[in-house]
Image (cartoon, rainbow, N blue to C red):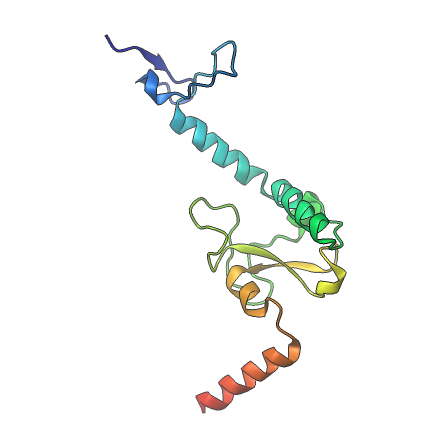
Length: 152
């Protein structure tokens, strides 16, 4: 005899193996199958992306002594869905894209010395952020001049 349980979300009758065995739940009333639970967690992360980003970035800045005064509302207010430099579409919190994906959103500092502060940041693509990572204006200008000269 196989024991089953009905998921509260998808309403499917599934074997008990399809559920997390969370011993911390004393009442055992978490009747969401593993798939529905993981989909809800992914949705919650995406819905709270700006909050999670500020929490993570603040910790990183604190440990590196980088100035920081951003909040989730500010980050959401400057979000356009496009790279501030190229205008191309960028995405955040997309499952499977990874933070190193060329179209993944990165927070860029105009002046690195001022840290992650209001008025000193913009959303850019991962590709653009890696290109300008710690390059100086002179280095970027030299690269541009070289590319223009070689193209002729």
